[in-house]
Image (cartoon, rainbow over all chains, first blue to last red; front, side, top):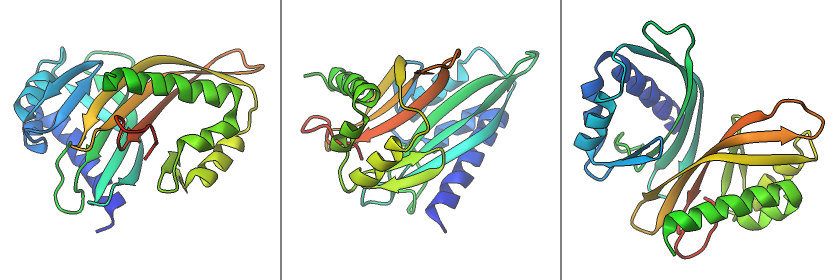
Length: 113
Length: 113
């Protein structure tokens, strides 16, 4: 499968999981993964999932506007930059968001670095 | 030097160079570097510099709002996410921008992947 297509499928899967089953995001990270969220850093799948679970909203819907992918390193890695809108339940205006994911081995498995 | 501080110093240097001596950006990339710019990909320092030189504005000023850094891999790499405003000469309103840089070996040298 084309790495770009695989990365885009993963982006779709990630945000669908975020919107419908946020605890399930823990499965997409490893112990060596790190999340930087608005300047704060969280290490490891459980800490990352706990941070995402603690966000001050329950229902949300991500709409993806752009997905830029480029290869990273000789081991089949991929750098993915996503931008889009985040609609929270009960809010009139969507928030803009952007997120970067660095996959170590996108051709072997989809886990986030 | 703290890798975060080094990455932030590099960000400062990158955008100062962009605003005052755009052709000098070529020195900050390698032949193996890639730039993805609004979905288009450019490989190698010369192609990247040519793309940046071809942007449809001459005078500009970047103002950095956030710099998020996190370590990437065992070789001293660093993933840096920058957001901010881009003021173009003659324009009333600044543009929002964001850019991601992946440094292979931030502790050894500052070159962009």
